[in-house]
Length: 311
Image 1 (cartoon, rainbow, N blue to C red):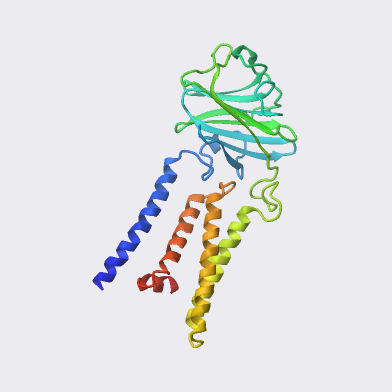
Image 2 (image 1 turned 120 degrees about the vertical axis):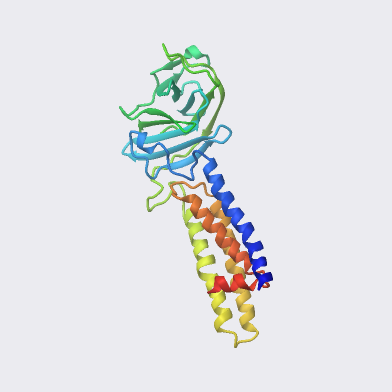
């Protein structure tokens, strides 16, 4: 009995360490698509059920957006607060020149958000309070909280231009407080992007995902693997032992198929970016726990765990 208990503890320790690592990693991120928007109460519009993407991985730019009404789009850009400005704009062909951008920064504890028109490449050609973006009044704000800067704004347009442009300024180089002249950016980028017009929680799923969306595949595979086939395999082993040796072959076949489908569901789940999902960290921990317990079943010598799972 003592040896069995020690063996059980040795098996549980790696699983507990894995779960602890997942929780620790989730708290290390001040903002991500896995969690809710921290400054939702400070943003002048409803941020529920927004789409979320990692816009710029190198600079940790997180962009949330949603088609919040007829010809109305809402955006929230989140980036590390480094005493520099952050910007996100829209372009027809992916170039900076001729585009309009929203720029945000924090100075003296106060957030500032302005639209700029990029007429050229020099700082003098980037003019504040100018541009082709039609902003909804009283819906633009910049907020600094917990080491991150949040730039929120709403646009009045049928659909934003197909390219996102983004940039970040040098640390300590903020726009002038007198005329808001902006200095040259430290780095920049652009990418084509297909905006989803439907909200993530809508019945139709993501816009542009034809057929069966990836999230539904993840749910279907999880249900079939962990919820249907594995329990069926256990029932075969319990109620069909008289059909020896066919019960054993059936048990192995059903369990093996369910295990493979379950692994596919886990892999697909990690590939999803969490758009529109809440409590995704808890969801991941539950998935990892189920996968760990399924792996223990192949270790037939550890009978105590198999019996615990089966009952």
